[in-house]
Structures are given as C-alpha cells and as structure tokens.
Length: 125
Image (tube, rainbow, N blue to C red; front, side, top):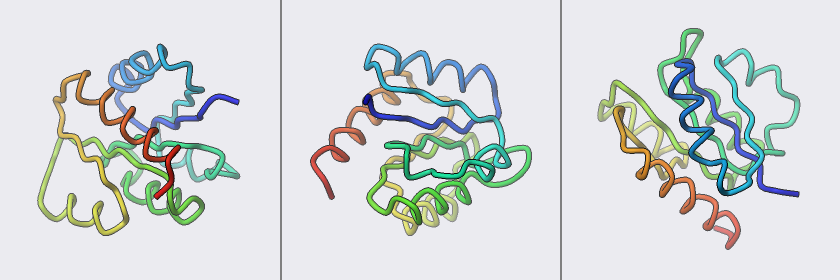
C-alpha cells in the first residue's frame, strides 16, 4: 500500500497545489479543508504524513497535529502558515513538529520537506 498523506488546508488553491506536487511520488493523498473534517476521521494513525495549515476557518491546525501525534507519535507533520510567529512555531516544535513552512513558500521547499519527512518515517525515529 502506498504511503498516505493528509493535507489540511482551508485555501483550496494551496491545498490542490500541495496535493498535485506530491502526485509524482504515488502517495495516496487525502485533502481536508477544515478542522472538523479531521476531527470526524476515525483513524488518523492510518496516515503517514500530516500537512496542516495553522489558521483554519474553524480552528487551529496545531489541534489536528496534536491529535495526529497522539495517535501516531512518530508521525511526521509539516506545518504551513501565513502568519508565522515565534509562539506558534515554538508550540509546534513542542508537539514534535520538525517542518515549519511560512507562506508563501516555494513548491520545491514543500516537496523537499515532504520527501524528508517520509524518508525519516521509513527509517524510524
């Protein structure tokens, strides 16, 4: 089974762009546009990578990251945000987030972070 990626982003154009950027890897991509979508999912541990925006229309993407990491402690998370602040990045790092991208980010940077996250996942912690 191919690795599974969950992309949580409320901006449709960014969500689709991120998903399309990962197509060449043949990973299974699921897109969610709000925190409520993720909270309704029964098993986040089925995903191998979470990509989440911070500022969502219905909440904070770090809540999704915390839930994902509770279910899958070694799961990699990429946080993307248009409003980077030291407090947000620090909170993300305390949760275990290793990849933090500020919008606008280069697509190559995103792909590189996703590949690195997946390669670390395959090797283990």
